[in-house]
Amino acid sequence: MANTAQPTQQQFIRLKPLTKRIGVSGSSVWNFVKAGTFPAPVKLSPNCTAWVAAEVDQWAADRIADSRKSA
Image (cartoon, rainbow, N blue to C red; front, side, top):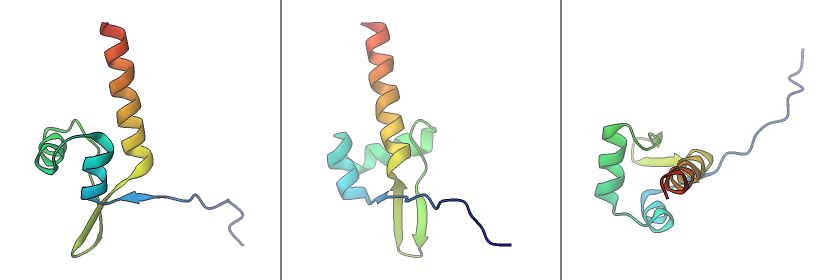
């Protein structure tokens, strides 16, 4: 039986572009991950770690929504 589900296209973001995208340092990203307040990265290979773009976008949207509630 063939799989008829449409594949989803995932995009990954490496650390340096991620820091520019969200405006914090690499050490802050890792601190957020350790604290459980930022999406965990995906290990793509032994020497390559990246974040799922959709998860980062959702994190950013949540931060914006939270800041608008308290304003």
